[in-house]
Image 1 (spheres, rainbow, N blue to C red):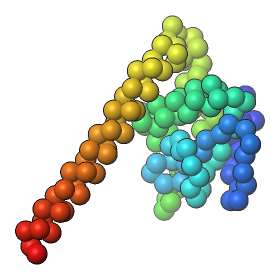
Image 2 (cartoon, helix red, strand yellow):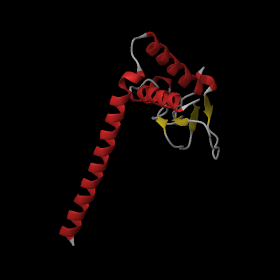
Image 3 (cartoon, rainbow, N blue to C red):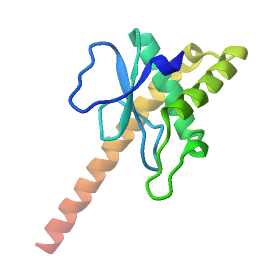
Image 4 (tube, rainbow, N blue to C red):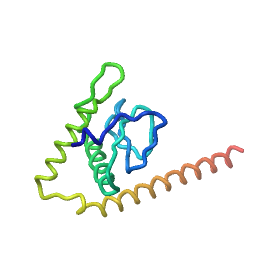
Length: 139
């Protein structure tokens, strides 16, 4: 099922339907991205809910290191499309067989992401303030 939804991204190609990108090379291979970067697969979703669900699924698999076992290569590590699909399908089968639901934790995840974004902005402001104080001191 997922093999038909994940394609190798071609530079310059645009997508009308809901989509996100999946990094295919490096130590972060398997990481889902909202915007394109070099060496990516693209996940083509049928609707927004499907895109958000699979983005969440891939984010969780990447954060927990499920894709690390699939990395191959001696100099530049990369992951095969088939390995990404197989790992995601295993996780999807596990989720579907249990009593867990993405919709049960969707709100909490959105709140955590909003707090994380806010904290990143606060840290950036503190760094700027620190630079301004050093500038004032050394000037």
